[in-house]
Image 1 (cartoon, rainbow, N blue to C red):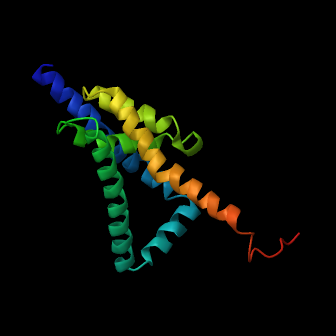
Image 2 (image 1 turned 120 degrees about the vertical axis):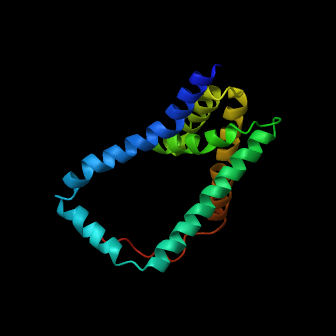
Image 3 (image 1 turned 90 degrees about the vertical axis):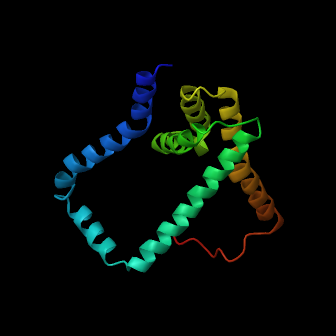
Length: 163
């Protein structure tokens, strides 16, 4: 791949989505401010202490860092991972988040991984496997464990449903 082609792909995969989101915010912000519920939500958000925002930001950062590390180590399980793969991991999670139209992201997660990592000239099968195992480790196994716990105990403390 030539250097100009590499620069164009790098811009398209990283800077274009960022600039698009900035333009959407600039164009949509005045329009959104006309809605009462948006103003109320922003007013309520302004009343939350900065310490709470920072705590939520720290926990969110840790949460995403754990997913990032899990996916990276799963990729490493099939061999050496080039440094360019580190750019693909956040892009993969971003695409997966923007396409939430399946049950538990099945298929979307794997498709996004194949799309992103094939553009980075990485083996699509490795990306697919890492994305699927990430689902198994973070959703399927804990879900089955919770289901087993629910079957062991009868429902307690649920009370009656008002009609």
